[in-house]
Length: 111
Image 1 (tube, rainbow, N blue to C red):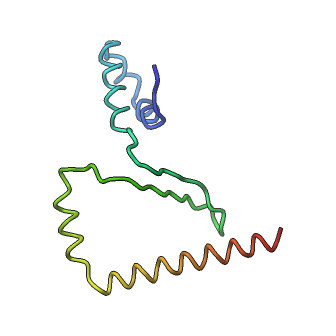
Image 2: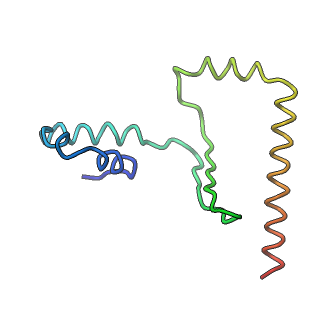
Image 3: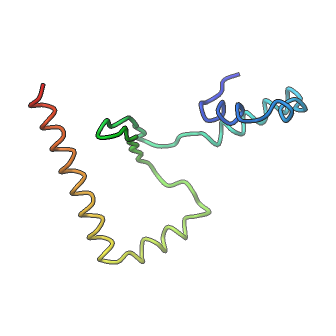
């Protein structure tokens, strides 16, 4: 049976006394549902560790939003953004780009 990491993690968390009553068909159906929940529909899904002062995990995902039930909430949030939040976001992104550029330059010149 092919299980994704998400499914394996969830199934490993179940106690044996809970898994035991499942028939083989029920167990396979449960694994199938969990595999569908873990489905990845992103065009870009990259992740890795950044060893700065501590290890930080970086995730970059890009793709269409397929969550139909929450779509109206996101549209409302998009319209209510203030200039202050937008400027804060631009400042934060700029600092991130500057820091990553600095780290890259230090790393390149060091080696």
